[in-house]
Length: 183
Image 1: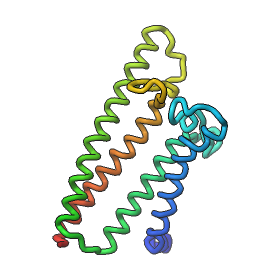
Image 2: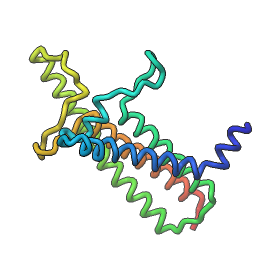
Image 3: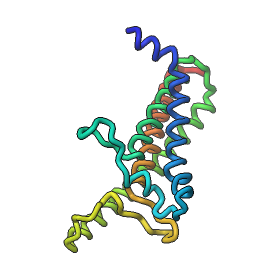
Image 4: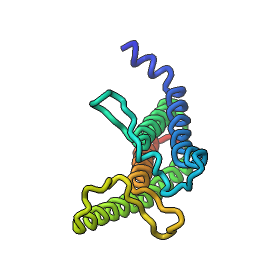
């Protein structure tokens, strides 16, 4: 129980560290690193999908984008929990804005997740139909609507799945704060 009390005591710091680290990893991997190797960022997210981080040798590998998404999600959930435990009083208007905003981002991100998964599946089916299923399906990209800035589908799907998760978590906490009748 000592570990739980330490985590509870430092939850605010952990949340900030996870969020800052995750956002830095996302910006570094998607923008800064591609610019430093003097290559076009084509497709966006390529460097965060094409490599594997060896967490446990010969057992557990993660793509940088997967690790980044996990860290941001942990940081965001920790932050919501910090706000929830602070017993901060929200006005009805604030809670309404939080709920409406999270519903909007839930809709937006769910559409993008579904679109990316369907496009990814269609491209994989197309490869299979042509007998090219041996290609690395993690490197498939969406060139529409801007062929000059394609997005890697694994990267885009994970980023929008993170946004969907964050939106749902915010919605749940928003309803929890609304139910506490804090106004």
